Image (cartoon, rainbow, N blue to C red; front, side):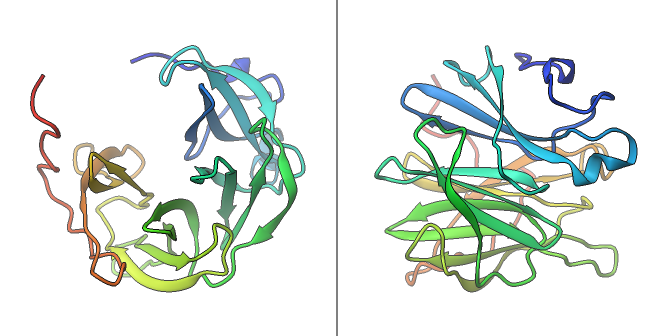
Length: 240
């Protein structure tokens, strides 16, 4: 697997190095943009000093170089970038029960105007993700569920606008065996898929495996609950 970079190469990051929680990558106008949360503060200040860094490359899995971070944001994590059909890009991020979204400028590294709260979500925890289907915008996310040893469920809301307001629609995935669950929903060759993670290989909450299963919609556009499998969706498009 190609190496993106080391944290030591993030000149504005915390002196001790550290971590990048739940990054995202977007493609626009021939360039891949990798968005990663990383703190700047040393010691115990790390959790109040998050920045959303940006690295770019002409390749999807190599050659990335850190360009800086997006200015004017709050100390939150889990960036998601959605590019609409008209080419306008939007940034979403959150954490601690708050979720915000806003437009990105054409350079994909600056916010165009103010970020705004995403209104209408129920029990938001973190891990926002936005996709669009049949003219409807879907914002999915992890909730705060914590009961009987089970944790995050995946919820979602819909809107006619990429920045809401949102109409809460329900839970589309129950907890996995991991302490957390983050997810994304994408379409490939006419089929929709739910990506998520579990700890079924490691049996250790913080060492997770990436999983994918098919996702289906009801006739009214609501999402049918995704039932995780051990086999996944199988080959797509036949063997080459």
